Length: 290
Ligand SMILES: [Zn+2]
Image (cartoon, rainbow, N blue to C red; front, side):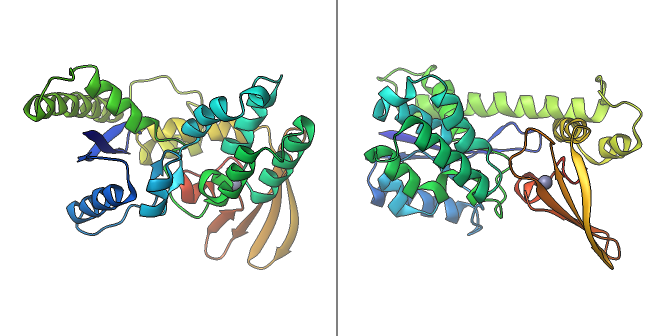
């Protein structure tokens, strides 16, 4: 039988187990059963984002995002020759994972295809057709917690399978499964403790904004905030318009950013918004806004 764990992320960005199902095969009907059962167990509340591997059977069963790690692994098999070329892998990874806007994705994708002359490769053509399911730039409106891959589920498979043998039965599996959950809960407790004591070194110890962020965020999320705050120091910001109550700014790194983002600040409603939509994706202000 195939073990299908459904793994999410807790407030400390650690793994959390939502459930596990056993499938007889990897046909679309089996996945439909798995996801419907999951939905029932969650009281009908649908997840905003599900990361999966590049399986066509799963594609028929649900609307989902594709795991960038699996795409990388498939690329090694399907476009071995191109992947081996100098610099291709680094640029391919960047296009799939780190482009912030559709325009940026298109720009870097086209230049990659031209530079390595691989646009007409069948696997690459198929991948391009799936761009809306794999690229963060096309999914900015949806909360994803910053997850790009189904690696969390793969890690679960690994931590369970390394404790079991092929001859073990379901009872053995259940015991082992509980051990893994215990381990994860213990890590979560440790995260809670560390967050409540707050005994760590901070890069921006006395900055008032960071002091406030430390009050409202737990440590794991504060560190993401702090990283963005530091990145913001290197960005250039220019006000391009002001029409009460909204100011518009263009923000970006003077040499590194191909696309500069537009930040809108409504001084009456005290609402700020950025075209990178990072706040909606992971719930932390982006470096452009900061
Ligand atoms: Zn932004």
